[in-house]
Image (cartoon, rainbow, N blue to C red; front, top):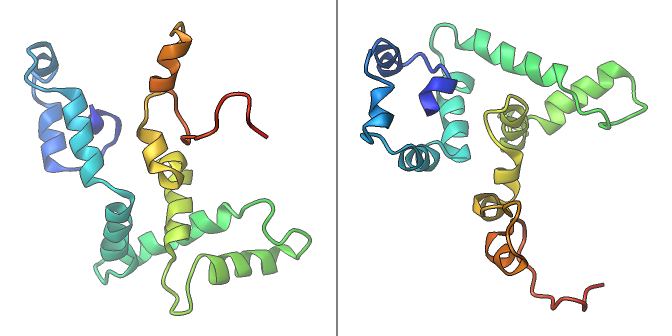
Length: 166
């Protein structure tokens, strides 16, 4: 399920791919995908992912970590937001983007820059970062009756009465 779509290179994942019975777990109801997904969502929070990146890549002295840091900076350099300091020369835009927006005064990569990068890489969902509670609510189901829609609607909760909006 989760591990089938993303290759983490974990030993457990590699072993699981060699398991000839891996498709039977679902059919025999030995694995509940919704419970597994919920457990993984609780463990792999945006904070946990950012902390892991900081510890294992950005602040690491291990062999190869500098190469990974350079790749992350290259990604940020290549994904300069279109409207950022429009009208300025390209070199100045890149420098301002990398050194004033993506890093703090102690040259530590900001949470915002990491979120931008992780969302751009489709690792994090921007919707869940901005409104985590709203992203958890179920959406309206096609063909549902109008009185059912109040329970299943997605988005921010409003307290306005119908017909009294602005």
